[in-house]
Length: 142
Image (cartoon, rainbow, N blue to C red):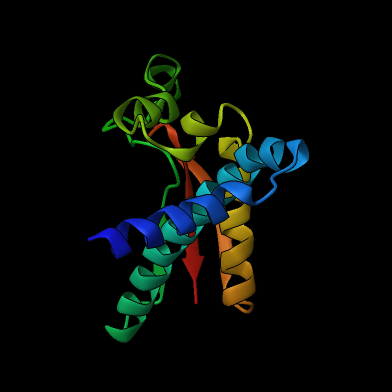
């Protein structure tokens, strides 16, 4: 038991003797935000990618999707002034990266990055953007 305590104290002393500078500490928040953004982007991309592959495997050649938006059951523009699909999605997903990062990454930047990733992954597919059901709707065709 005494040997275990000595090893534990030695390890703690070593860990405490490591120097960490102010610039490193100040950069930790940005590093964590970058990690969270990358994780969220990869998660959203993987969901869309897997759906595309699944549909293509079953003979379907198009897929429509939204990003960070909760669709309405109505498509009239006047209703969309009252019902905001983006705000509704953020309210229903309080742990999303846009809320967590406090404008470090915006919904528009997040969406653009996902679309760019899809364009890169499926270079000869066509991605079009529509606005229906109070959301931006993307359709990829291959």
